[in-house]
Amino acid sequence: MGATTMMAFAVASTVAAAAIFTTAPAVAAGQGVHTSDFGTPVGDNTNSLSVGPSGPLLVEDGRTFEKLARFNRERIPERVVHARGVGAIGEFEALSDESALTAAGFLGGAGRKTEVFTRFSNVVPPRGSPEALRDVRGFSVKFRIPTRYGGGIWDLVGNSLDVFFIRDQITFPDLVHAVNFDPVLNVPNPNRAFDFFGALRGAATNMLTTLYSDLGLPANHRTMNGHSVHAYEFVNARGKRSLVKFQWLSAQGIVNMSNEQAAAVRAEDFSHATRDLYDAINAGRFPKWNLQIQVLPQELLKPGRLPFNPLDATKFWPVDIAPFRTIGRMTLNKVPGNFYQQTEQVAFSPANFLPGSVEPSDDALLQGRLVSYADTQRYRLGNAYATLPVNRPVSPVRNYAQDGPLDTGSTTGDFNYGLSLVNEIFETPDSARFARRRVCGVVAQAPIEVTANFLQAGQRYESFSDSDKDNLISNLAADLGAVTSDLVRNTMCSHFYLANVEYGRRVAAAVNCNMREVVRIAATLDTGLPDGFDAAGVPKGGAAGAKAAAKLEKKGGKMAGAYEA
Ligand code: HEM
Picture 1 (cartoon, helix red, strand yellow):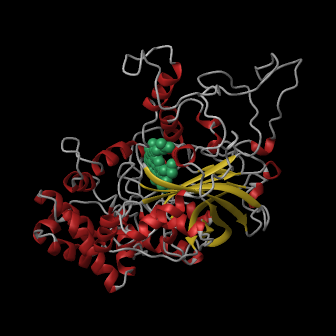
Picture 2: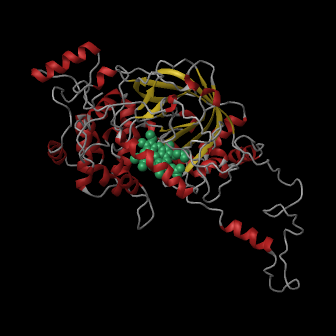
């Protein structure tokens, strides 16, 4: 570790423990009497009770064994993904009144303030790994909503990139196994990852094009945006639902690193992004992000209006059909007082939403996430994880749940069953009911109809400058070039080729692929575009095209889809 980073460490470690989010009294190291875990004064913290100075130890020295037992249990399972992370405390301030779209009180007027706990993370590598790696970054924000704005917790658990590799939750464990360490050698192995991506038949092309662009290696957490990736539903007080996506726009600007710069950072410091964030906060340079929303116009949800499914997490919503608008600002201004108690024990979940105000969409990736997070947190942190200070709301918790391991509640009285003729029960306001909606369809295991696997990857490639394109090709070649299977390399190149012919040719040349084979595989793949649209997502000639074009002209966009409002 260099002199500069040593200094940064010293500064970070002297930050006073923030009492925020902690109900137990803060304990200042070295002040007061040393006690056991039960508060009993300890007379000797360096010598165990033994038979003479060199004899065996006595079991009656309960404190010694308590100290060891507590130590023996210091580790909990790390997060199965996003294990390496850093948290910070801050504030969200609404900059507009969004009550026409959502009944969420904290978004109902400029100046309304909400406490936040935010955690940035790397996705793939384990807890102690270097932060300077090409990877998606997690961007999780826990909003602790004050009672006056309705109370409760909303977690916006997003990523640094605006799309994802897969669109159905059922393949998430396969994705994570493939990109994780080889189960035999326990080392990263691009052969396995690209084998999986190749077998996806193109679904990951948009994400891989983003991940291997400069955006896949942010210089720091402060200098990246965040994205919800999924669509969510805003519901207003009249029950009107609107599909929205969220973006955190960095006020620090976007700064990325090259592979070479990252290697130099790793050689010097495994924790550069943590230090950067905490140094900025400790120096009073509080990082800020603007929360922006995109609202998808209702009429675009009708079939045939968009060349992709707007609930498909492998797709972004182009700004020409859904422009971004700023609705609030987050400022991170405090370093948590204890890494383990707060950053490690914080439990975010897309299932922490606000029924009747902010609800999940039908996105098949998001739907799986609604179950997954609380499930893993019960395992990772235990049954009582919601009662840990960092996970508690600032508003009261009132229900009839009881008992179980580590119950710290202070309920009194004998009424604990929620329905009663003789007892007063807690109110259940209509405003917190789920929005009503009609759902119809055939129950089946089937892929979505419009996959459009290559459309946006091509558009993204075409939007890149010459140097962005050069970096994308060389970043991709660094990993794909290490893949030994010709079939896997050629298949991956066929995906890039279907996105954009030049893109595919350039990657193929960089990783030594057989272009004839690449074109042959490409011909076997379905571009997944709906009738009436050409490969660029533009309405084409013929009856279907004319119909699609006429619909689109009214809207002034270029799109279509398979989702019915
Ligand atoms: C079906 C798909 C997915 C599943 C099953 C899944 C599952 C998980 C699990 C089990 C964790 C660990 C949680 C914990 O231990 O506290 C996690 C963390 C996380 N996931 Fe996902 N994930 C999925 C997709 C996504 C997507 C699409 C995003 C971004 C839009 C995302 C963002 C995150 C973030 C940011 C974290 C870290 C939360 C934290 O900071 O503690 N995940 N995910």
